[in-house]
Image 1: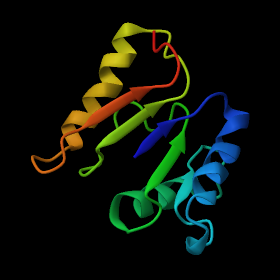
Image 2: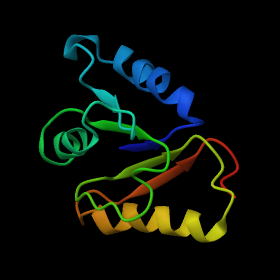
Image 3: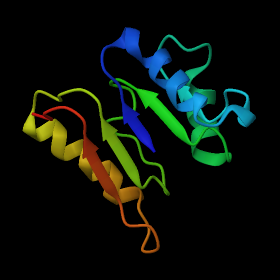
Length: 112
């Protein structure tokens, strides 16, 4: 799942909320992936290829030009401000979905 978080300051807290749902994973269930991360490319690699993190929380880094087969959920926790950007982000989700797991998007705020 990719979660498009609110403003930059809210990403770590949102990842912590998801991690609280799976305490046995020791904080590996969700990860905030940002340009400020210690190694954002390594974080993206882990999200794409490893079992954990299962949830990537980001703002502006994973919304366009990012492909990850197997992503079946995108959660919008902020408005995109643009119908075109909204459609591009939704396109990420369908491009990565498989026939066994149809893609879904959920908007927690008005998306445009």
